Length: 357
Image 1 (spheres, rainbow, N blue to C red):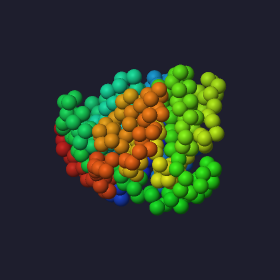
Image 2 (image 1 turned 45 degrees about the vertical axis):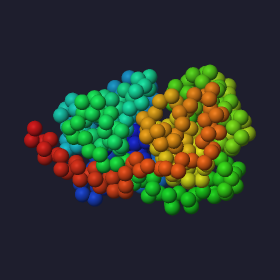
Image 3 (image 1 turned 60 degrees about the vertical axis):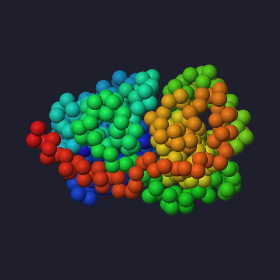
Image 4 (image 1 turned 180 degrees about the vertical axis):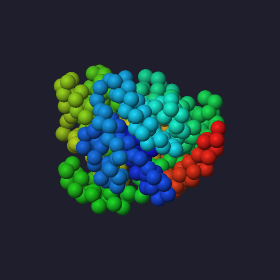
């Protein structure tokens, strides 16, 4: 049983679902955490993800309300289906609810993208990923840094370093995505080959703090480079509440699907984001990144010089540095194609061991 609910999980589950269904029966459960078509349905269509066997329709509400409702519904589905494994991804409310529901009724849990740490407990994602790692029977960290993070917390059993599943989906979609570039650039009033920054801002720590969001908007408006900004629903809501507006150099567009995002990433000069996944995708595409946070789970991108953490007050300097020629070295942090098949291999190998305990 695979549990998904939000954009990062849709992206990661696509190649894993394909690998599982070559050999086994999979039950796909969508919690409904991201329910808007631009944040959910378009990803299923772009990535060829099968229709979920269950769509729980649980979206909105506080963290406690959402997670609590998911726990109740997921436990009912698990008891009905009795899966051999429950797979969860990343660090959303759907992730921790799926892991906790399964662990409580003694169904083995596999956590894909385990071991990430920002060491910032103000982020709800940090709470979710720590809890999920400690509930899981098998953990698939994407990098050696993530393996070391788990080791420091005493988690060594069931840890398998197989690489990052985004390698399978991101690099496998480039040619298909490039066919969409011309239409996207026309939508953003850019010409092919014109330099631009691709930006996303969605974390509550940036959007819900009036002063912080004002500084981000000002920084975008004064950037000399055009900025293409797919507007997350949370950002749109808070811009309206605070009465902020972007200037003419910011090409604000509706949220885009995965293929369109890959096309924009392939065409841009730099990336500006507070998203964990986009930092990593920028690295895979060799695009310098400016991360509007003071911590990151992807510390290897910072240590290798391809990613810069910045506060809004230092935004201009960080963007200027990102526009300089990138580092000559680009270490292979995330592995090679075939990650999803290696995950299924490990689940097949580990299940008999776990079942006899």
